[in-house]
Length: 427
Image (cartoon, rainbow, N blue to C red):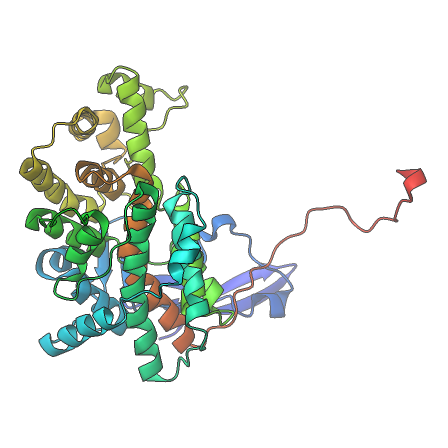
């Protein structure tokens, strides 16, 4: 039985259909609202507005649930690899052995980046933030791939997808190599995707690089946990830009820029900057826990709580275990990480944090892992982008295949009404 919602405005009553999702999420379809009433809704930040229907990700913040294509994040992180999950998110089903092997082979086929891209990266100073460089390089891929992808052609879409997966990883690591003054590395077709990330980042021409399997396993999980997260800022940006029929590279470049912000992908960088500030102030974790609880103190404890999850972030439960394994395996003795562990342990038992469900989130633990691996703070968000790439691709693909209209939010004008023009003498 179909449902309806009713709105009364200026003595008139209007009926609007109600949409119910497969997980019983309810939405009032106001697609015709302005046409029939002349009014619009006001929803700053779009916290209560659904921009689309989607088959990709289900998120329930109150219950702490995250699923990709119906599969629990806990199962995927434990039993699948990042490329398996990427295939699932993009194409809708877990791959067979043959499909996964072909997917990985095709990514390798397109991992070689045009040498002229080096001229572009050489134009940036070493001090440029890696996310700014990555956004520019991703956009520049359009110049080397000028052909417009026909989204209705399955072969063209597939080629665009594997090309993006292959080249983006290389470009992301090149941003680190540039800032470090190291020669740029190339993809090694004898190694896996995550293993390639490690050697692209850290292998030097002076000797072989030994890949730590514990670290690879942890990074694989981190990439899986970041792969998609419903209609967040960067994902909705990718869909918005793509709705103008901008290409995949241009749309993802816009997503990188959106992810860069400290309120989105930059949160794990903010965690480490906070920890470094605490260390410089003497390293007293208890002092800063007290400051966080003082409503008159502007200090904010980064990496605790989440805008969407009102319970424990399900991704944090998974990555906490990985963080513990990495720290134990590497035997890292870092005062910054000691402060992080003190904050974590205190917040998990402190009544103030427990009652408000301000648990450590995925940004807190990812920052700890990246720090332990010797990855610079300004590279943290680049790693987030690598993980989020399949989600951006899947969302762009879904938006185009659904033939969604160009995004065009409305506004309520609050400026001056019509007024006469003033000449210079009247101003």
